[in-house]
Image (cartoon, rainbow, N blue to C red; front, top):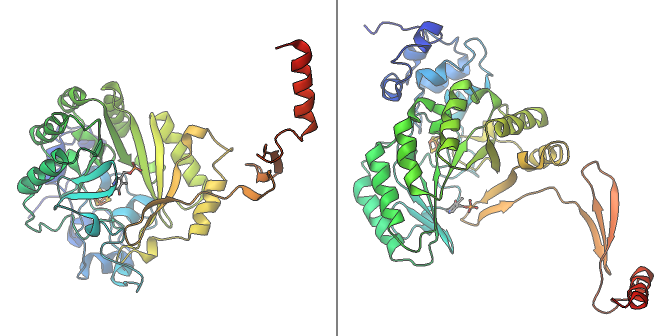
Length: 391
Ligand SMILES: *Cc1c(COP(=O)(O)O)cnc(C)c1O
Ligand code: SF4
């Protein structure tokens, strides 16, 4: 019988094993019986953990230690512990909600925009997020031969001179070995037309132990390299995460954050503001806030676009401009990311633009129109002054 380790105890959390990312992965919890000793499971969670589901469950001891053992509404629990509601598939939901497969010239590459590609380098993650957009691809042990896929993807990029930016994602690329990540980065750097490499990863947040000095020393050799992390709730921003992201910052890697707007996890202006402000203190710049995609079995986690716009209205002007992400919808059918910002232009007619400011007050801006460039008396006055000054 497997002995129970108290993952919530300080002694365990200070042990050498705890700080070893491979130990964290080896001790992941997946089944109801594995969670039971640690969490007071709700009926809904029990149903989620026992019913046949389309998407794998895996939680590292580190992530478990951030969960509230008594509260099923804990924002960390809601992201990783399956709910019985996942079995309800809305007629609007899809297995490929962003239409990625339709823009995939070779397996593992999504080429939607003219100058950049998404490169899916692996199909495994450290933990599985219930709302994952790529639940059709990740965590299935589907036997996808990623060695072969990565080679074909690299060939595709080599052959496409227009690709100046490669976004490595998955799955989670930082779950691969240092050697494998280096092989991919080195191959990309050898392609003259690839100017920029980006990595999209949840690892610095969910498995901060993985961000070792050795990994950072290797990554540093392949600049310009950006990393986008993925954080949804301020509870995820722990001292361990700060240590990991500081190492990445010291290696000169600019960090951005992609968040997903999720019901009961971050869909209030207070939580979102706390999240984006805390991100800046970690030197992570909020980049995108995604509206939750129409992924199968996620309707209980989705909220409305109106609510999202309301949250965005309470950020701009009310907090540091750097803290405000772009709220986007990754359009169903493969339209790509479409910003859904609050509309601040109230009307625009005959060179007169009426705008609403952050506090809701209306301002007017007069534009010079081509037909009447000098009709504005202030302009005439300025011109006369310049003439009289002989400038
Ligand atoms: C998000 C995404 C990118 C990168 O988009 P940016 O707006 O440049 O960050 C590239 N390709 C695909 C298919 C994407 O979904
Ligand atoms: S880490 Fe990213 S790819 Fe992996 S399950 Fe979460 S959202 Fe999906």
